[in-house]
Image 1 (cartoon, rainbow, N blue to C red):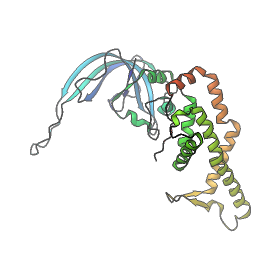
Image 2 (tube, rainbow, N blue to C red):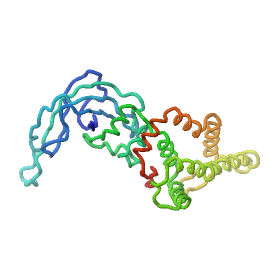
Image 3 (cartoon, one colour):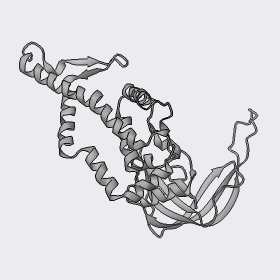
Image 4 (cartoon, rainbow, N blue to C red):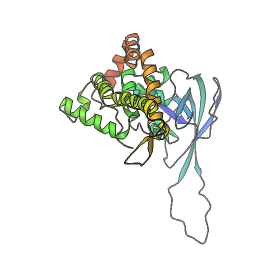
Length: 293
């Protein structure tokens, strides 16, 4: 059974709905009838931090109150207004059944929801009063299930600069001799991504750290190390070597404590049924590489 996601930012509802709370929400639409009926499950979501959204509560439509014709807005009588389709205000009674607390942020679930394909701005999929949520995705959200392999892949690849993302996609097409990366299991793709990051990103990080040490030990009297930088030819932004070296140094320290591969292996090992479920759901889905900005 599908559910309805209600964005509290667009229907004038309190973002913190308490369990057991009852009330009415309204949806404005030019549609004479909406695909919301008594007994439908409701997922209430609201703004979290930044551009992130939070699935906060699970509720139920207890009654479809009806609709009323919304009067047209008053206009300047001297200007003949263009005819507009009538707008209706649809009203529904609801009851909150439970709070959602486990992995309930869109940023945590975006790579586990097939309908989310804009990973640059995933929240755009909910920039409306409501949207239908298929039963499979509803089950994922309510249980806070995360497709670990696809999430690690997506977070890693889309954290790379756009030039690296494009390069990685081209290298993958060459390695697997296909432009249809959906035909390649994402676990294979993730292992290839680890190889790419090691060769093309982390190796450069080690060079930056060595260069920064060399500048501080041999040239600090001639050149202030903190002023040495690369210039990005596309943006003309200066990329300070010392600052980048410090970031890579921190990354390598974290990696030494707990690698992503080890964490992923542990997660998959502890949740084999969930990973198998997602593998079926995302079969023949392309790798989630955002090749936009």
